[in-house]
Length: 123
Length: 107
Image (cartoon, rainbow over all chains, first blue to last red; front, side, top):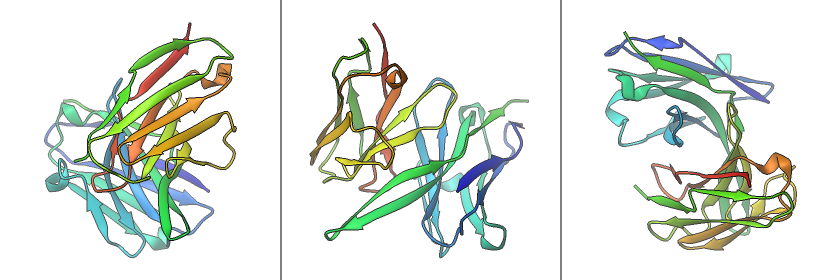
């Protein structure tokens, strides 16, 4: 199974950042599918996720500007981030969160990642 | 948000050394703690999940321990390919959060 991000590498301030993650060799109709970003030289920030039934969770710090959606027919999920500023410049990763359940507990982890795509916000 | 704090932020070590990285959570997160390794220009790779479970394919020199609010990643017999940045991550509550990272470089 491979994940591949695609979308524009340059977005103007105040416009909308749109990325798609294509999932190969496996059905998207299970697991949580996640977007994570990493500003240049900095740490990792969880943006949000979507469950295969369509429910979503978002980081409250971005919630008013973020939309994550899924197209099961194309085995893809997408990220839209509106009203971007230079602070949104980052490498954006898509990832799969897979659970390991046993003994009454489930532990999830990001076990598959895309290669990442750098999105620069600049005029 | 649950704040995750790693220490140290960086360390220098030699091949063959034993290295320990600590991650502290801002509240009790049970065992909902994962460790990732990231090399420059690459996506992170999961090493440990559920605080102490070794991800398939990861060498056994990586061990995780802890529960509640304090966790440890230990790398025994440090190998050249282990020089990287390591992140802890909690998935106990939304938003999921990461530590600031610990860079392990060559002494």
